[in-house]
Length: 397
Image (cartoon, rainbow, N blue to C red):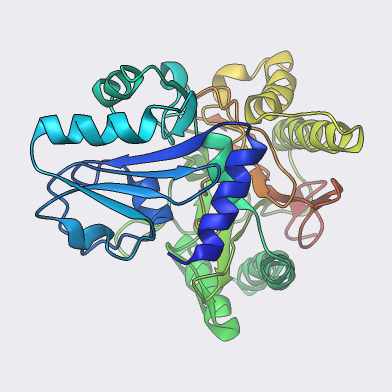
């Protein structure tokens, strides 16, 4: 880790008006800390370590005497311990004038994605008369904020995904009109081929779900399990990709279509509810940012979920509204969630996330409409990429 990253972390600590950030790990228990501290997967971590970055001044590492090499790349004073007593003494020395620190902790485990430090360690650190706050928003500022380069590169991918999903529906139309067989797996392979042409990376094949398969949010066809697509079928396509480089950030969208010239009312009704829920969430974010007001992940979930609940389909919306998007598809920033968890993290400028409400009628069909959102540094809120789906596609029209 270089000094520039330390300086960035210290600026975040000062912005949060606390005294420091205390990182802790025991046997790979805190993957967030290991990522931030750039400790690789090959590190053999069998003992506890602490790494304290103060708001100002030099960091301090407390490391077991037989594992000093694991933190050798980190700047700062090295304090070696062997016994529990020496560990206690070192923590006493670095925390004696400290009042408030951040750790990977979430009160009441409200945000399990960042709750990585065990309760006993939290109690142990609190015994030094320090207040512990969650590092959740700090991690967002450190890891989830896009660079200008990432934003610019992402736009190309996001636009391409919309083009690809439309091309996939055109392929279905061509095959149906020609009375040729086409399956979910064929469409999936077509999309993957389009990714290859553009040299994009994806971590998993896209979702192509027909009828009852579209009602399973994580269904994906395989070589051994797929359906033939026929006239009169409902087809959901969810695809995601990024530039094939470590710094690439993801684009992730979901569209819906019906294999016919006209669309039955039952599909139109559900799609309209879902798209209204999607737009309600987006509009809330845009309004809050325009007015320079705070907004948290759970509030975005509430905005979309309320629309679906009022329409009488609350029991059919069985996942959170969206997820953080970074170099990881489900990133380290706040998720749009007051269902699976209560995500109280702030949505911050420079970050991105999906909005993807859905209604899933088991055994029949499911609708999900997904867009990606980016909050510019000036607070302007943008849906990245191509247009959002405003109405169902009548694929044979």
